[in-house]
Length: 323
Image (tube, rainbow, N blue to C red; front, side, top):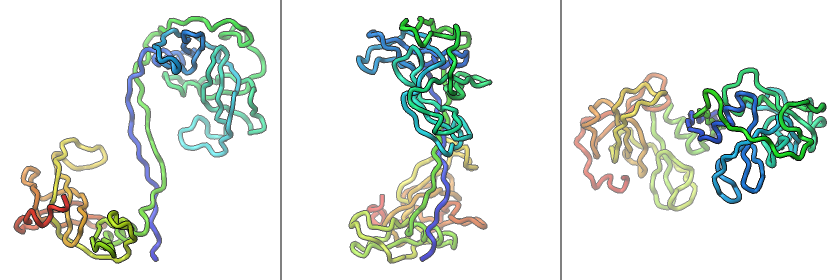
């Protein structure tokens, strides 16, 4: 059996959002080396702050300043930091209840090893050298042994954290978070065979032994009968446009001018339509029933697009079950 393919895959996009008055004060405060929380009506102080009480759901806006020192409530050691994590050397993920707060903040704790970390240990914020108004303005937490003098609320005092106006110059109003997922994808046995055939400019599907339908791309099992599909069937190369859409928004990673057409194409001999771009014809002349064929570029592992064959349009009854 040929080796099953696998490859690294990355899905990422920038997520832009506004932050609202409470988060604006919190993030701007971090930029100014101030940690803010919110006080609820029953006297609890929540850090990080939220706009609505998680218990009563009432809106809360009473900002208070807490200390940059605190206590580890629980932790887990990270032996192998990943890309974009706070530290490049092994560290602990820790929940830290800052002095003056009733909830814990999750962040990295820089320690020489897991034996140096324990629940109840005292830590303090290590501020980033360059701060922009993000949670990363806290570079990490670090072990803390000597009580500071006059640096925020006294952790040994029972006094409530002092009120804070939340007003800063040039407040943060929005953030851009880079959402990213890295993983290894394997198409499996059936689609590995399909991809390898495409490299030879062939379209290969698999036939269900029960209903006899041919699926392209193959799935390894019939979605209707639930049985394995092992019989390979070569289909195409020509096919019929069943449905289509006109794309008017240009993708950053595709060098294709808009508008263009993306269509479902039922290859001859297949019982499942695949999707591909239509070229070689004005976008406003693409239609259901249009007969098309693949266009391959030198060294490509898949068709660049499909173009009209010049044949008469297919009769609707020949593809209506594949819409």
